[in-house]
Image (cartoon, rainbow, N blue to C red; front, side, top):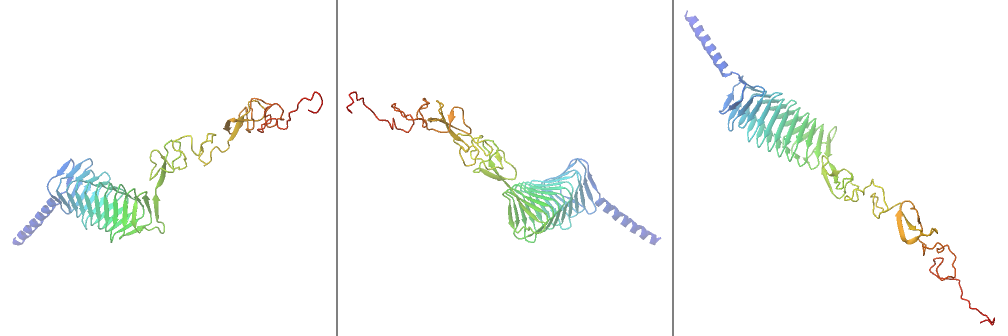
Amino acid sequence: MKKNYYVFIGLFVIFGLALMQTAHAADRIFTEHTTITVDETIAAGETWTVNNDVNLTIATDILVNNLGSIENNGEIFNRGTITNEGQLANNNTGVITNNFGAAINNTDIGEINNNGIIRNKNTSTITNDGTITNNGGIIKNKNDGIVNNNSTITNNGIIKNKNTSTINNNGFIENNSVIKNKNDSIINNDSGGTITNNGRINNNDNCTINNTSGTIGNSGIIYNFCSGILIGTIPTTGNAIVQEWCTTYYRDSDSDGYGDPGDSQTATSQPPGYVMDASDCDDSNSAVNPGAVELCNGIDDNCDFNIDEGCTTYCRDSDSDGYGDSGDSQTATSQPPGYVMNAFDCDDSNSAVNPGAVELCNGIDDNCDTNIDEGCTTYYLDSDSDGY
């Protein structure tokens, strides 16, 4: 009997401990908008689940310490601190927004799996000492956000580092998809840091990839846009490609499709009012460009550095004697009616006067040689035949 009593007491204690453990590890499901206003610990074996279309807000200066699991299908707004020593799964419909100086600390035993969207913004920080796997999701580090990676990040989705934000890598980043460095942002691959790029990295205008003391293994493509800065050794061997992606555009002030070689800018996309051509010789006149027809107007219409090529000066032949008036001319590409190609007539009102006429003794310059009555002699009448 006494033996049975002790057995009963032992079973009672074990059952009680089991009940306490079960109560300690009770799962929590958020089905309506909730704000966490006191520090919370998610115990080992415990799961917090945020349902679709539900907002879970962690208030400023509040700590949520996850030793168990977080399953997010809705949206988590973090304005405090999340310390992850367990598993944090951001599912397809999930959004995690780390905002206004908030922090997500993934410890050396923590795992973050993202299939949704993680936003780190407005001077907030994500520090990774464990494992972050971006499985087709999007991680956005923006507006002076900071990501400090001291362990492993595997990217199979999209990572956007933008708006003067920073990614500091002291660990290992494996990129199998796309990393976009945009809008004055920086990726620092520090001492001991390794980036293995099997996908694509875009280093946009005014952004920097600093690899002075780390290692980049590149078997993919690194696009360096216009004023992007690459510091340190960026490998280009094997299948690696480092491409300067930038185009020079020229202002087209007269909208004729041809640009001014003296007014240009480089950009990754065509700015308004600019074209890729640089062959206009007068960008203030839409009638002047390399596609124009050369006119006989004293200017270089077709921008070939010649003026009025193919043009001829014709002179009016008013008396139709085949000789033109040098004082009445026009240039044209073909002979106008009433005009001839010479300018030799000295009296275009008299068809008997021209360079082809016979000089007569008539007091005028018949043959236009600027002499009058050349070859003529004045004779006097000798009525008495005395020779005088």
